[in-house]
Length: 325
Image (cartoon, rainbow, N blue to C red; front, side, top):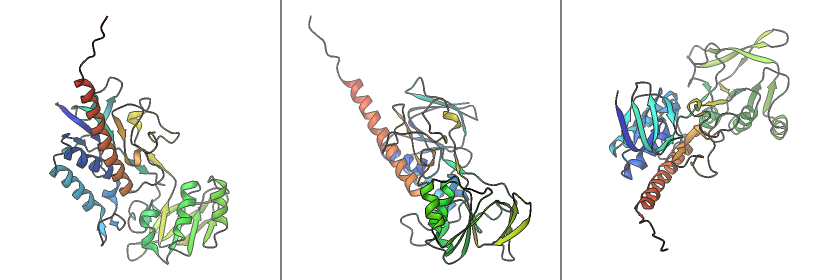
């Protein structure tokens, strides 16, 4: 067991964590990134990335994250493969975290970049066909289905928004919902029902995702939730839109969160309710959830952390004013 000290401790290693590390290292803060269970975050399980700025041609998600990691290390970041299991935010700064390894991490500032994971159905074929027709992000992957037949699975705001977005690329969008009414906001429902490109299948549950001879998604096996009748629907792409789960279990009762568990920050900033503690990326963003926005927030967190440390150092250096009696 060891103790690691740093001016900036970063928990999580997706685009937000690596970007925060790059900026922190360039500011000579000697950051430590505790990478977690999935170094590189969700992009490590994403194949084609076509919307990250700076790359004219399609790049692979794992490659992109390796490049971000290498850049962060190149400018002075220390990467540690460990998973944080507990944090002490009440007695900081400095802030303390304990890893699964038993190591202790002490940071004058803390940047939380633990991300969020899409919720999946758990149906057969879903994971196997990830990147081969099955996705959880229409904004990320919808472009690949131009002129093709696609389905969105879900009934909340996310599902309706994904279906509406996909009509920019496809004239044949089917929303599949296991109930007979949607949970989405009324204005979104009105837009959905008035869009001629969208068809809704009510009371249908996806039983499995089936591949064709080419190994790509070919159709969905459905079951009627009222009658039990089996059916299929041929699709080129299926988007699972049943929500996301932010990785914030560590911070329950320690930092303010919204009803879905996303960390709350001061509007327009990565600042949490505790000075010196910042949140960046999908752990605090349930709206955009893009690599480029996560990277931007990571940059903001590092810059705000640097300013926070500078202000503390300035305050500590100011001479105490003596008041004459």
